[in-house]
Length: 211
Image (cartoon, rainbow, N blue to C red; front, side, top):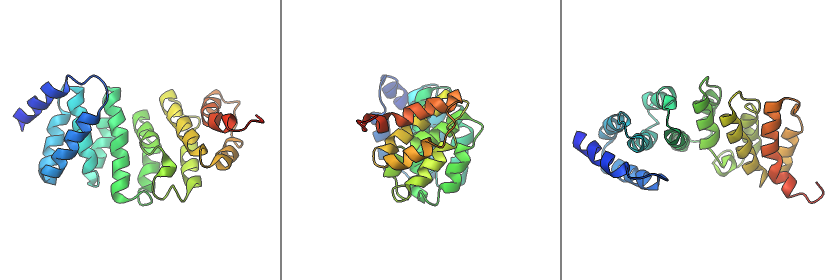
């Protein structure tokens, strides 16, 4: 296993943009090995100094994140990774967890992550499920998605606020009236809230010639 990690380090360190090749290798390895071996491989990969190999490890964690211990590791450890690219994969792995167990069954976990003290964790939930209303359950319950995201409209982290604003803008493509109704209830005298409002309202405004 150590030799395999070294091979990945040599190969992946040459990837400066994107993650598709890394994701494809992770998916192939997940299909080839049992859960126990994948868990061990993911942990070894995540200890690598090469961020691309840590990304690979986080992809693997996502595939087995129906395990409570793995999900906890993602929330409490991976969320502390200082590389923003790893945080992008954390968001994808969180969505993978919700997909595996079912989005409706994940509501409590989604709320827990959105309420975390760590902005990386909050952002992983907001960003990972985009486009929210393209996901099962939220497709039939768009207001649930809108209300969950709107809790973070004044988040202290700009990183999180941008994700929330963009996620609401995504939803407004199909549900402009619902998003507009929510936005009109906000106090935009708050500069943080106003930033999210502006991002979320952009598509609604662009699609309305009278505005």
